[in-house]
Every structure is written in structure tokens, then in C-alpha cells.
Image (cartoon, rainbow, N blue to C red; front, side, top):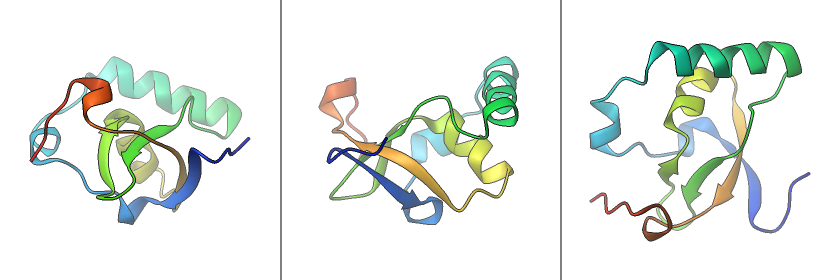
Length: 89
């Protein structure tokens, strides 16, 4: 269910912080999300994006799996960097 604080967003619109682009999630975590997607047809939870900048705040592993699978749009929840203790850019 999509609420006011959530939306379907084209994956290509989401901006990835440089710090995340330089990292690689653990293969076990990628596999867990891949398996969930294969079993249910959905990501296990929303990706979190800052609405004004479209900067990814949380869910980089889910983003990678969605990109691998050619998923065009993903459910996102609007969030901010401070909520996660992050201060990119």
C-alpha cells in the first residue's frame, strides 16, 4: 500500500551518494533480497529517498538488486539524512 509519505519512483531518478557507489554490499545481503524478490515479486521494504534531492538515504542493497533485475520503478519512502545519522554532500 502506497501512502502520502511513499511513492513509486523511477529507479533512474534516484541519486546515489558517492560514498555508497564506492562500496559493495555483502553478497549474503544481496542474495537475501534477491530471494525475497524472486519469491514475492516485490522488494522486502521500501527504499528511502530524500524527496527534494532524490538522494538515496537507505536501501542501497535493494537499489542494486532492483537495477540488476531491470526494475523500472520502485516503492520509496520519503526520508531525510538526519533520520539515519547520515550527512552526505
